[in-house]
Each structure stands twice: as C-alpha cells, then as structure tokens.
Image (cartoon, rainbow, N blue to C red; front, side):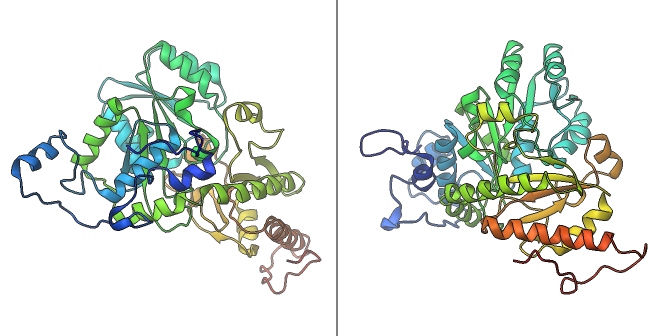
Length: 425
C-alpha cells in the first residue's frame, strides 16, 4: 500500500492534493508521470518457486489479471488513501462491487436490514436475489430511524446504508445506526457514491465497508464502468476471493480512466456543488415543482445530519414535478445544456426521471411502493457555468408554462425555436 500523501512538513495533505497524488507517490515504471495501462492477462516467472510464492500471496507480484493487475492496484491504493481504508478491491461495475460484498457476507439464515430508499439495482438484490438464497431481508422506512434500530435489535448480520439516497437524497444518521449495529455485532456497509470520499468518509463514522460506483463521480467523464469496495484487510480478503472466483474484475483501461478522473474530482465537485445549490434554491420557487430534494437546503429533513457527517452536500438534486410524467416529457426536451441519460457524476449535466434512470429495473407498482413518484426527476449537475445552467432550466420551465397556458386542450408541443421567452442564455 502506498504511503499517505503528505506535505513537506509531514502533515496530511488536503483532499485536493490527495486526489492527485494518492496511490502514486512511489513512482511508475520507466519514470512515467502517469499510471501505465498494463493490459497483459498473465505475468510470467523464470523461477517456479518465486512464482508459487506470489500465487500464495507470500511475495508481492502478479499472476493473472482477473486476480490482480498493476493498473487496477494503483486505483485500489488511491481509494484506500481517500477513504482511509486498509484495503480496496476494484470491480467491473458498481453493482458488481455491491453484489460481491452482499454475497460474500450473506448466506442462508442470515438477516440483512436496510432501507426502502436505495438505488434500484440494489433494491432488486434485496427484493429478488437474496430471498432466493434464504436470506431474511428487512427494508425499513428510510427516515424512521427508531424503526431501523428496532429491526437491528431483533437480529441483524449486516446493515446496509446508502446516504444520500438515490434518487430521493434522503440522509441517514450513520453514527447512530452504526452504534445500533455494533450492539448486535452486525457488519455495516455503506454506499458512498453520491457523497464521494471528498464529502464523506463512512469508515471514519464507524462503517466497516464502503462501496462506490466508480462509474459516477470518481470517473467523472461518463466513459468508464467500474466499482470499488474498501475496508479492513481482514474483511476485504474475503471480498477479493469472491471477485477472483466470480470474475467481475475491472479492466486496466477502465482503471486508468477512473484514476485520471479522480485527479480532477476536487475541482469538479467544487463547481458542481455550487451549481447544485443554486438550482435547488431556484426549484423551490418554481410553481410546477411540488418538492425539491437537496441536503444543502435548510428545509431538507436531513440538513442538520448532513452538516454533521458531510463536508459538502453533493452534486445531485432531485425534484418532483406537478402533473407527473406528462410534465416531465414536456420539460426535459427543452433543456439545452443537458443530456437525458441514465448516468450521473459526469462533467456534463444529466437529467432523467427515476423510471429510466435509478429505478429502471423496477415496475411502476414497485416504484410507487418505494415512494418514487413518476414526476421525480434526478439532476446530476455538471461543471458548466452556474448561470448558464440556471438560465437553461428557467427557459425550459418558461416553455412549459407557455404551453400549458395555451387555450386548446390538445395541441402539439412547440419546437425549441418556436418557444422563446425573455429568459435567454
């Protein structure tokens, strides 16, 4: 493991410095300034005994890239430092990391406690896959902390947390729930994708394992899939073994792209959060918006908790439109500086309803049971100028207002060139 990034005075460097240097201070082969992409599937040895010792883990080295790879190892070292972990294991996707952790530590007869507000793919594991294995799954009202504590007290082998939640941006009191889990000896896992290591370090709050979809903010450019899990080596050894046998290994090129993306994370997040706050505050004033979800708003139910366990409020905003999907399909095509896509955390702003993004795997009935309105829109705020994103959203709403004010009850949508208001960008 690479040493902690330090200043010339021996102090731990700031996060903006750590994202650049973490895991890469020992230098690279050939004096390269960037992490090399090692694409070899296997690694050869002249000395068979040496080879065997590496295979047994008695000596450092690489055997086969499904097990370990030099480029991937650099990414793992970087996340160890950013999350304050002893060990990390990278995967081919965020869901591969989440699945591996859950399947490593859960089996028939075990009991897992979590919340209803979790990413749709994670919810599918809880609702569909784990019960097939004979795992007792209990999903609680996300904001009912006392109910979660009561279920933990009834018996819990693993507590799974996601905070802020995707896409409702609910905030869980990590310290309080960790305390409840530790009273019964439960393992605690937290998805830190939305917060990123810059805003929140769950291990420092008592969590045992942290998972990330590295596809999102860590990569930051929407061009690489990846996932990562971090924690104590005593736990990660089992997770690593699961990955080696089940095969969801991260490829070297994706690892390189994620490493490159992490180096600008602090700069990206600074601008993204500034814009997210501005968009959230504007949305509170928009008559077509029924509710706004962003922890940075003082009116947010989890604002005080977020201030106590996060260093920033993140770059995701979600809001509920009056009129449901009918208003969604009117609004989103009007946006000029936005992708309409099922991703988040990229440099470009991305809008999308839950039914085609976070909870595309769920049926309408399942989404409604989870409290996911058809009018809910998730915004992954990009690095564009705040004023441009704000003006863009305002002109899109102006177009919808103009259309809804038309006297004819049935009419075609005006084109973007036809829909002009005083709000221009």
